[in-house]
View 1 (cartoon, one colour):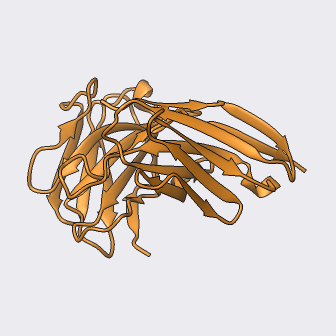
View 2 (cartoon, rainbow over the protein chains, first blue to last red):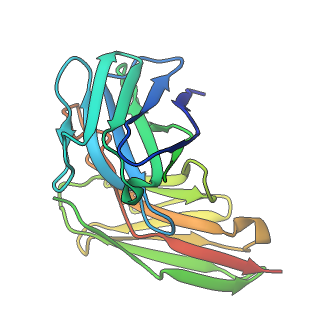
Amino acid sequence: GAVVSQHPSRVICKSGTSVKIECRSLDFQATTMFWYRQFPKQSLMLMATSNEGSKATYEQGVEKDKFLINHASLTLSTLTVTSAHPEDSSFYICSARPAAGGNTIYFGEGSWLTVV
Amino acid sequence: GENVEQHPSTLSVQEGDSAVIKCTYSDSASNYFPWYKQELGKRPQLIIDIRSNVGEKKDQRIAVTLNKTAKHFSLHITETQPEDSAVYFCAASIWGAGGTSYGKLTFGQGTILTVHP
């Protein structure tokens, strides 16, 4: 089946630094990807919709200058957490829908971010 | 925007019993309702889904029912097994011919299911 890969799976960074997470569709093209954040024992909350070749659409309450999203190709979207703080520590997970259509959304493996 | 409420937050059953998890949604435009099983630190796994033109769907021990009028849908797991223990999420989405919201999922709060041997 279709595969969406995220990298890194785990990352620890210092407060004030930035960290980039990649979401890559390995065997299909994705014009749209979605970024979710999941705090421990909580649900997945949509942060933003990443659109290839255009600006991301952010959900209410999500700071676009803090969570930079770039979707420069049909197979790659990146999420950069800028000036990270301990409260940004979370599980970040992406999903992608194939540009060719179909009825399935594919999730990445997720990335654990710990800010110390 | 869409709001999905899920109950119960925790559910404990004995092996072999049935488990039912319920969700309600607010946006009448939503027409696609998937259910996911998630183990700690892993990606959500789609276990069953239903579209608004269908009232019920079954796949072996798992079934989902949908009441469009009342805007609620439920997951039914029969003959539960210890390996069914996980967190289950319902979600709602608008699935259509395209558009930026296509594939955007709004999740319920999750249900921790524990199946005791």
